[in-house]
Length: 217
Image 1: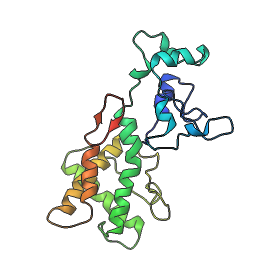
Image 2: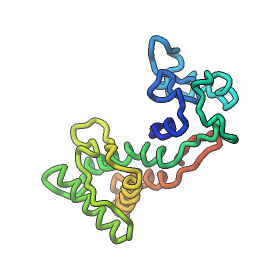
Image 3: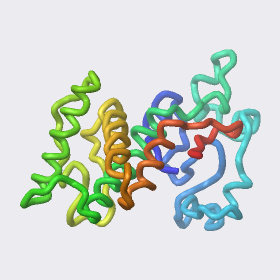
Image 4: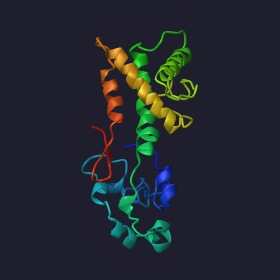
């Protein structure tokens, strides 16, 4: 699952993170390198991946990590590795939504469901204006910010992705608006965006499992 790990690393001062060869504080997943074990490659998402069998507990983390590399939070009573939950803001709004929401726009572009205009830039601008008006009617605070091919990575890019200029609160508004728009487009029609409508609704209902993984129904 893709999500923003920067805050998690900075808040807990982990010595193993996405910028190191050992990418995870909770298991032995690693980047492919001469000094790492190929079987532990973090890019392997198969259920049989070796790193899935290497998940460690707080007790093991303390025992195997050099003292100078332990999180300073180890001195705080009650802090454990398991207590470092993955919060919705970084998992959903700054994580998977950065890919899913512009992919919605890309799908609607392919299906010719966005407002008509001569250029992609203008079509996205018209959709943005519609979003501002919809938010105003719903009395939701929404900055007058506009979708562009650049900040949505649309057009020539292979994979749509929201730029880092979009903040969590703005992404939450976009998700709400696209859900409303998807309902509007699919009501009484066979428009090819019902799956998108479902995906947006599902993102609004995160469920946290006992293994500290955010699931989407």
